Image 1 (cartoon, rainbow, N blue to C red):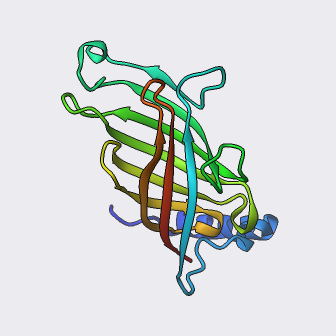
Image 2: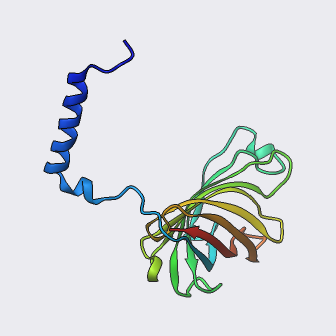
Length: 186
């Protein structure tokens, strides 16, 4: 009872062969081409603008306890932040950081859970992405977050991102963060 009848196996095999003959593009796209691994170091500046006429990060949700929490616990922010070559927002655009961050500590301010895609729009990495997922303790001098994947030139990427606050306007919450990202990829 645990085996597949022969006529079903034969039918599935014929169906697969027909699909490959009728849709040659299915056979042309390899699942993975594992070759030599490359290590890449990226350096850029991340601009998180939460106030002003054109914010790049906006609160999209909050918990019932958020306003009474010393750490704004439960607030969720959606971001579409610039990634630039230099610390000035007018410097060369390299990409965007798109994703969400949530204030994840009930009692200690500045502990974020970050889920973001670094989407590159310039140079040899144009169209490629890196996925970052982890804790960002923004009040620490240097924060390390894991890179858990990527696409394009960064397919099968893994590594880490180091973030350092370059500039913080305490009155507005707007920040420029310097990133050094180290990834291994195929």
